[in-house]
Image (tube, rainbow, N blue to C red; front, side, top):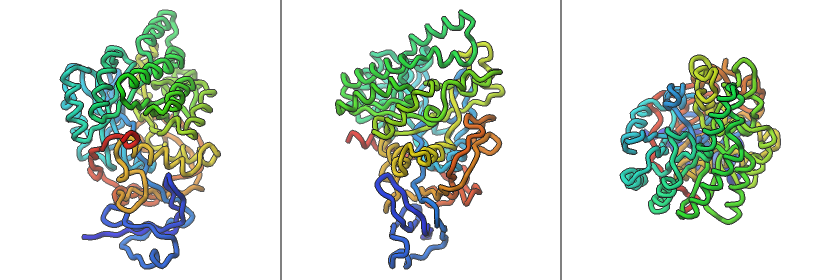
Length: 467
């Protein structure tokens, strides 16, 4: 049975344009857009009409970097696919790309099947998977081809975490060569993990055990060195490269240099690096543990370089790296030894709002907000034109956004399954009001109406920046 929803009176904002238009949704897709008050728009009828007067109408967000139910450091991230995708919907994100993990000695297929089982029937919004390569060998290299053909088209490697996820330069080069042949995109956690482990050992031996030393041993220069090395290996392999969670101005400089050479090198940063600094790691009473993530928070002076790179397109995407661990019982595992604090922060609910705050503050434009949060991640990871925009034929993932509402971020009001907020008490302007996922209202003027199981798995095309 055909169902229609009409969104009237809003300012439609995409990465390409802003226009006062009405949006017609039919059977889960965008059917048409027409100027508000035009004869075409006035002729439309629908079972549901949403009044967006005075509001923005924007595409649903695409968060291309989440970790739901991820085993790490003797525990697991506290958001499941059910709780995490629900929180994402509250924040105006309608698609997430999570990371399936290959266990050392295991097959890629086993890891992907495990993550499918975790997500199936649980998600309130649409989802897809990247594949973490933990054990690069001849068998897993061949498996990469099969995964690409099935729509799992991006593969993450780690230059950090020796003994857990770490790959050496030879393994990385082989994986990049395979991706160059099969069209896959290599994603890189760029930190020199071997050198970092030396600094960790030396810090602990000297009695430097507090959370602030997590940031001090994970030096910005070691992020920059690894970024430079990853770019060099990608050039040798003829492979595109996407560097995740860029936090240091020195690493940004490496990406900018590569892009000035017209290399297919891309990067993301995250809200925590844009709005928080390493001072948080030094908060007393072990409170700094709440802010432990990798790459780590940097001194405030790094933020200017990140914002500038977002404006110049040397960084293309803002994702969250959402990987929450409760302070009580999880972050506390590292009392007396910062290296045992589970790495990760909550953030999937607040990305769209925080980037809108950047619009309010004049750091980025409204269209750049949508480019970074919706359109660019959709194109980067083979989800466009279905996701990331408002155009006829696209999925009706639509957010009605109130740009004037004021809110205070707090653990008392957020919907992520974690017992603290890294933005506790931060006041921002703008709030998600209504969210449609494939035409179904999942958030109705501040009331959650979605359900577990609505979200569908999305096989993806290859990176649309390197076609």
